[in-house]
Length: 165
Image (cartoon, rainbow, N blue to C red):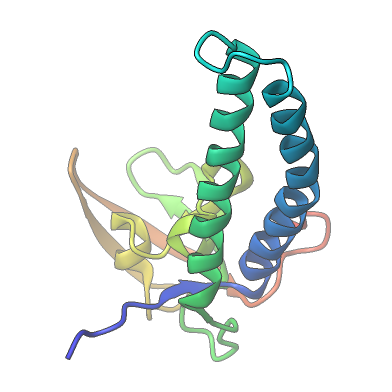
């Protein structure tokens, strides 16, 4: 029997997928109309408008299938409130090599975006942090080498004015 692999994600990540799907579905009738108009121009073998419209519609349909599959196999995880780091939690870290500090939210793989301070739970840093608590020093094994971080703070929601979408 085949084991189904569910994609862990936050409630916000799930909502973002639903929003992307709604946006693409709203755009689809326009692409279908463009394809019909290009087809009416005549000879399809040398009709670049037709080829372009067909390619764009195929791309949109492919993206919709991908996003639908992401939703189908989504496992929504609510943030823990017991102080241990898990998916959805916000964590403030101090890198012990240069004493810089950063705050990340631990999110699902498809939600990860370091520019938005969203760190994938299965990244080397995310894996090292999982299930640890504030005050602990954690060693991270990354492809470029190992380093240590100190967990300064763990919370289940974003701090006021920080990290809110």
